[in-house]
Amino acid sequence: MLAGCGAGTDRGGFTSSERAAAQTALDTLKNTSVTTIVLHTSAVSGLPSVCSVRLLRTQPITFRLLMGWRGKRPALGVGIDFSWLSMEVGEGGPSENSWRHSFHTARDARTYAAAVRDSRTKPYQNCEILSLGALKVLPVR
Image (cartoon, rainbow, N blue to C red):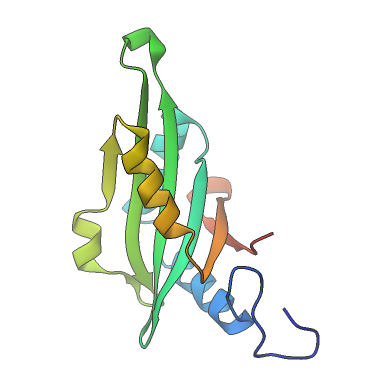
């Protein structure tokens, strides 16, 4: 952010008010089934390899949350599987329409890479899992 300038953007392209709105949106997911999905998938596949919040529109302010995991299951003979949670969320919570089709899996890295690439298009911020599945917005470094 530019020093002394509230309208400046950070490296990810967010203003401070957009970053605050993104955190408010992620906070609406606490104690929902999203928390259960995040914790369960992380317990099986490890921490996500990507967690990002991308600004989709400003009126009403809406973000796309993407969390992606690379699960390694060589003992089963199936190689590497990829899974990701992708959903629209605003300050009032998740979009019902995007929630219906939010969890995806793929065996090939290309499909996963395309989802990740889209989530890293500016403006976006990184995020991380906190205790009990809460999510925190992090600035892009």
